[in-house]
Image 1 (cartoon, rainbow, N blue to C red):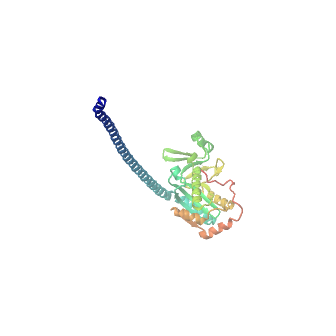
Image 2: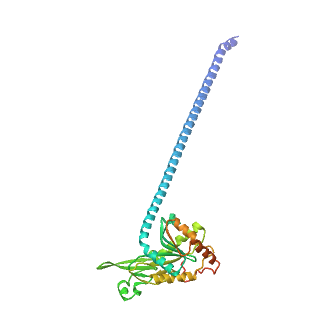
Image 3: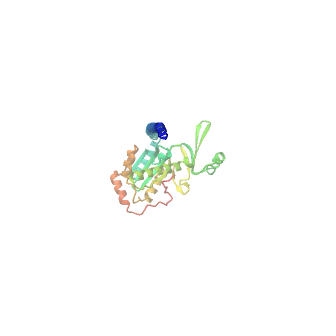
Amino acid sequence: MPETSELTTYLPWAVAAVLLIALIVLVVLLRRRAKAAQEAVAAREDAHRRAVADAQDERERAERAAADAHARELAEVEARRVDAETSAQQSRALVAAGAKWEETSRCMLLDAVTDLGLDGVLVTNLVFVPVDATRTRRFVAQVDHVLLLPTVALVIENKGWKGVVLDGVHPRDAGSSFATLLGDLELEPPFAVQVKRDSLTSLELRTHDAGHSPRRQVRRQASRIAELVRTETHRKPWFDTAVLYSHPDADVHADPRADDEGVSTVVIASQAQLRAHLEDLVRRRRPGPDSPRIDELSALFAGLGAEVTPFGQPLDRVSATATATTAGPARQHDDAGASPTQP
């Protein structure tokens, strides 16, 4: 019986102890669960804050990108506007200058074709934007004259230089006086030298060699015209080239067909030489099967603002004659007077 009494005495305490332990364990578990729940909530809130921050950053990046793109677009528009304005200014300046200096050579050319009874068109002061303008940053090109005949297209660079002109002839080969004064000049072919009176007591010397020579200049312009015509008409033009010294007070010493790396550009210094060269071209030239018509080229050049002066027969009859001539012998590109349209 005493054992039963002791068991009865300690049992409630044992049960209480067990319950207390269970309560403690439960409290610990509940606290851990609450802490885990708080951490989960904090993690979700942190993830939400990061998502909001990322979205804000992305929105700001998009806004900056849009602003940068808009700024670039505005800069490109402004650059195009400046290019167009520069091109227009250059065109106006070239047209104004050309109208003053090309009248003498224009009259010489019209007199020559009239005397020879030729039919065609004379294009004067052609100003255009070269096809390679975006690459060379040369906004406009100016060509003094383009003479269009049924079988000939001749690009002419006019030089209204006065004084003594040596084109393709070195001073040391132009006589003892020139050799004494200028024989030591270093000139890179093709070249031209001009000596003119600056005042009563002084002379002015100008040298134009390599890429600045008149012959190289006219071939470069002919190449640009050919590229323009190919782009606009999808035809393959052939342009002969010539340099015309038109000033009445010019004393020109020139190799009439001075070669530059196998390429010939005719140098003309008088009305008689001009007539003789045109006669020679008309006699030898035949249009190629893909050559542009005179009326086609005239319309193209007139649309660019050039002065287009027809002479002889009306354009429709001239173009018809040129078309009929195409069936004749093939054009000779390898004769001495031919000048490829390459600079």
